[in-house]
Image (cartoon, one colour):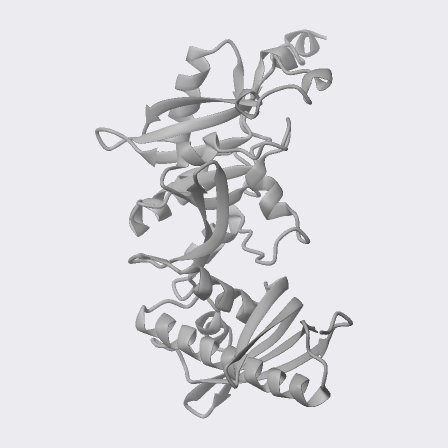
Length: 342
């Protein structure tokens, strides 16, 4: 009886009216060696009946503070508001793309060791800043949805599947031979574009172009429902509903390692009538994809990065290599004509 009387029970639970649910966290360089932490909250004054009439900038509000760690930032923000800051429903963490590799790796370690932040959150690099990314939301989105989380969680909405979880980046950091791939979010006027990725290596951050990002997604089988353009005999042709699947392996031949990739492409050519023309375009597409993949692989080797997981496969085969092994790629296109011919 005495023990039961000393148990506090649920008296310390914070009510929903006193809780500020964080939807996104942005991290930018701060002053005096600290970071600028920005927290996005849903506007508690918005009710379901008013969602259709509110302005986009009224759906969320931001609070920022300077701190060395996430825990310190939460404490400071909680002190400036009458709500308890709750991180358990955070959807997105945005890191300023100007951070160095060492700073990003240190921040990922800080975030993953903070017990209140779920490791499942989406991670992205923000250009030109994390706070500007959080301020930019799609006009059609309403509480409690968030544009970036919708982008990363919808598998059929976008051709490029660049979603990366915080725990995945942390897991890649634990393997010296592995390169973490993180999507880059760019603010363009009043909209957001996510069409590039960055390779996080122990020494530097390598930002890919949109074309290089597409080629990487093709290799990894992360390009679905996209488009493909090829030039054959000075004639340009387009394929839609492009679906790509890949099979990759690494073989050990004595002391020599070889990476084998097989890339299969399916889709529909627009405005193609004859089978002969269709076959010629398939061959042209195979050549172009093969050229792009080999060029990307060579560039990754020159940059001492492995966003394909090849060296990680070698580690599992107990055959670690300091450089990328030779690559042999085969590309097979089975792109058919659509009914919309001219």
